[in-house]
Amino acid sequence: MKLFDRLTRCAKENPQRIVLPEGTEPRTLTAADRIIAAGIAKIILIGDPEEIHHLAKDMNLNHISEAEIVNPSDEKVIDKYAPLFYQLRKTKGITEEEARLTTANPLYLGCLMVKAGDADGQVAGAMNTTGNVLRAAFQVIKTQPGISVVSGAFLMLLPEGLNYGTDGILVFADCAVVPDPTAPELAQIAISAAQTARDIAGIEPRVAILSFSTKGSARHDRVDKVIEATRIAHEMNPDLILDGELQSDAAIVPSVCNKKAPNSPLSGRANVLVFPSLEVGNIAYKLVQRLGNVEAVGPVLQGLAAPVNDLSRGCYPEDIYKTIIMTCNQAIGLKRDK
Image 1 (cartoon, helix red, strand yellow):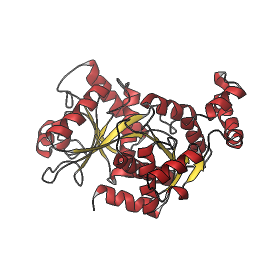
Image 2: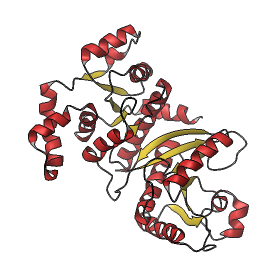
Image 3: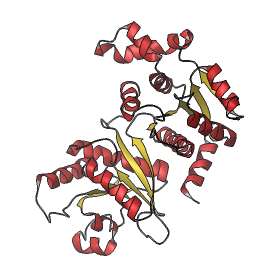
Image 4: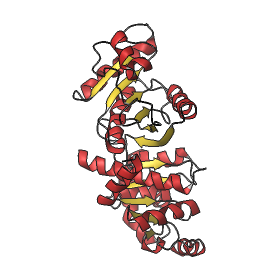
């Protein structure tokens, strides 16, 4: 079964409430209508109800009427969620009036609905910058216990004939958020990427923290960081199959691993590759995508206490549709892991 067929089936079996704060954005509405029609998730749209219904009519979207629509200008809505935001941010010096103004921002309102338990995840970014999407998530939803850093993973769907990873899937992280992670942050990225492998890729994670050195073949401060990150990650989750520092060939090619790292628990069969810096991860996923004819799905934001995923402002309705499905599966996985 293909990845998105499996993810769609899982979402249908466990319907989640996904809030879309850009509720008047046409691509978002198109994706929402398709999600509702297929029975994949319960959709919450934030925006002016009259404008949303007018757009839906003009675009011949027949299922938007089944979505819950939340008006960010409704004083009753602000009354419900502003006190929560004030409690979350009062130590930062925010006033009650400022809390009300911020709550009317759809990105913050959506996150507050998730925080309050009225939604299970949020998808945004078709109109907003990544910085704005993440800022609302950081301030309201915050990170998972034991995790202080949010990172971005890509699911690399390999073409037939490439026998790497598991079931033709490799998870790459971090490719989107943290420029130069410290050793503790790199360890957290590894733990989060393992969770992404389970919850979205549906594979049992085998994590390699990568370097230009394999088991002491080179010495450098950057190698030491990876060694320390590996130690910390083992402490965080002793049961996780994880190793480092490894060069990429030793991580995914059994014959190379047997020569370079014969005692590695990965045995050259890693399916989660954790890169030592953002520049390496971002360059790697784009090169593999282009040169290997590999489909790159993501980025999937990981490490948050509840799923919030960011879109490209140049995205298509299909991208939003798939991101909603992945967000549903993240929400299901987080609930299962609690």
